[in-house]
Image (tube, rainbow, N blue to C red; front, side, top):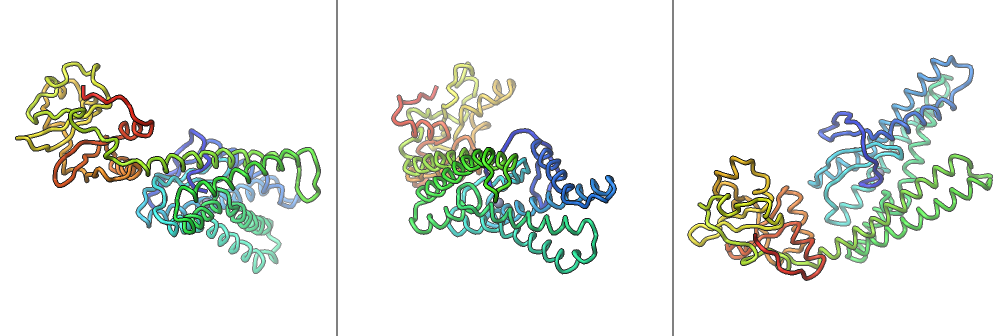
Length: 384
Ligand SMILES: [Zn+2]
């Protein structure tokens, strides 16, 4: 699973290959549940201590196999240069937090498929070890190894269901993307299947809670299925919305939304910040200044940078000292798409990007301008 189901809160559990691992509070509930489940698989003649010990060891193996599934996603994404902010384990499994979206269908396919392949591999190894060696030993833990193998294969199969944002849904998205050439239509299509699957799981889960189908263990299992279906439905619906936003952003050009003179005021580099902005509480947080030196634009100052100055810097600093030099950030042009500009803002942790053409600084663009552009034509913004 990736960038999907997530709850708040949790604890940090260290780093693996530079990737921070976080355990959501709900994960501990899952851990306790799995230990109870595993204990139920053990022969009754074992001592209670041995039963709990084996079950806890099995729980750790389960936890490690979830982690390996997510590491497969995260490390593949990192190979493509995408920033991975961490892996979170929670009640319903794991999530890799990958900051950027895939650039090509082939990337999306590979990043998605490696998780289920990893689960399948772990499952295969555990089942193999069980049948080829452990089974004949009569060791109580042996059955748990076989059972954990089956769980991992089931995990791979579940994740390959073709509804976005499940891994299988992302594989479907990659295929639709390759076929239609449209990332938007691919995401929408795969997310629609995700909504359908989620809805079906809710209906089936709730029905199976009351009606015994024989082939499906009713009771709490069916409510669990309904809960997973609900999360899938919610996430798939958000996926559709995100795809629509991405489409709207892609149709917008920086030139249509940028802040340019006279809305962005051009000011002298030697001007004191406190002279330009005598009262900070009156400064529009969306404003931006273009700093010029002998009529050449040399940098930009977003209002946020002025608002964040401490009092002594605010009183004493000149615009030159607080500006972002035009050549310090890779500029965009008027033709750059808004979604690309947004990605650049995020990647460079920047408030604003300079819009430069033919060596001339034409204006600036930031999140506020892009949001305003998405809302349609607005009354013009003022610099101060
Ligand atoms: Zn996955």
